[in-house]
Length: 173
Image (tube, rainbow, N blue to C red; front, side, top):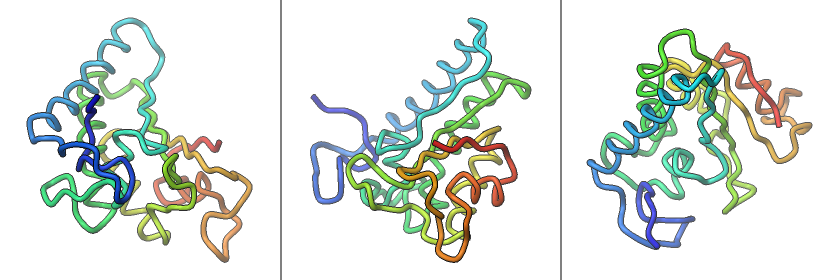
């Protein structure tokens, strides 16, 4: 059956349905906040949002699945990060300032192992900084080969660059 996606695209060139409406986007943002608030209320120690591997949040990040021309789309990774940033603001409002919030991120997608969201450190900073500003305490950086450098000319992997650019703890996997 149909499921939510930014543009009704499962991978570049594969349309399967309609883009999320403004109301559906707002509902998804609010739902993440409600779920995180319930996790905190139930006694969990933290929450981690899955913003990687081609799932919903990641579909907004990726220009291959996000063709929106509204607040949640655009040509730059910083513009396409707005959906995740709004989710993180909703989560942070629900859990308060002292509850750890993690977001898992990946350059690669299950639909395309070789794709990259950020081709340069500047693009990576434009992607990650809004997430930290919105409430992410830690970035869980999924890399298919964690031992490989993220950018040519540097020994740092994705998690190393994320820590350097965003200044928060990272996880590498």
